[in-house]
Amino acid sequence: MATTTTFGNPDIMRANLLKAVKTYDGKPQVTFYDDLAGNLLTTEQLFEVAAQVSGLPLPSVTPEYGVIPTASMTQVARKQYNYQKRTLQFRWSDESFINDNYGIVKGYGTLIAGVFATAKDIAAAIYLNGCTASSIIATPNGQPLASTAHPLETGTDSNTFTTQQTLGVIALEDATTALMNQQAYKNYPSPKFGPFQLEVAPRNNHLSARLIGADKQPQSFVNDPNSVGGKANVGREVGIVTKRVVSPFFTNPEWWALRSIDNSKHNRFMLSRYGFKIMPIVYDEDNDSWKVTAKEAYLFDVFDYRGTFYSTPS
Image (tube, one colour):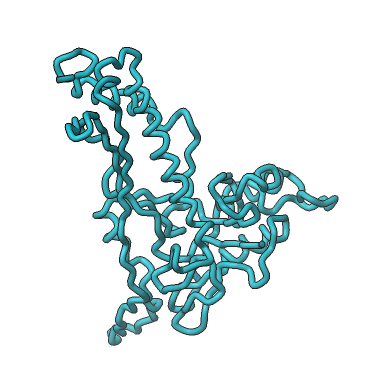
């Protein structure tokens, strides 16, 4: 069998594959999923933060020796988080396996790692691609991510424009203001002060750089300082955009989003069930070929809509 030859030894071949994957390590290409997800969680951590958007009233003033008022926690909503397993398998003939003098199989290691990284980039882009459809990604209250009708105990809250706006100076200012005006479920303020991260498709790459990089107000002859630029109000960084992510995996080139950079504020996450791994190389005697399988299991989702503002112009 092929296992008797140096180049056809499956253990050596798998070692070469793993070595190639380790060398790759995501560096030859730019990845976006970490920046879009923010929080990278394990299964255990998922349950630790699942209740963070539940409703509690604010504590009240208690007079000396007075009875302490009690309140029940409001379970705002429930959601089942189901991870996705992604797999890929490739085969090659026994003849090419034995004569792999040029390390073709080893070369597949970097390729297979690259396509798995691209799959995660595409999956992470759901924060924009699916933000208007609850069937793609929804908050635990059942609303899509971008909605003007997120339910509160009294009334509703919004994290999108009533009339959608293309990216620009005023739109960006309005979005940061909206994030600072967000409410908790019990209707008291739950502001997200910043700094913020701006997320756009490649069409708005240079525009987004000008908007947050200018010292004076961009897109105008006004001499006012750029109130959303990273150099304004240094120290507090209230309402300031200091980072941008330009992802080619956003399907609508005009949609954009703004979120808190603080990972405890924006409620997005990537759940890693288990990391990328390559299984042992196996010989399939039915068609005289060798096969290797790679797999990974994860999920991109949200605990809550707060901490992110969306704009979805057509």
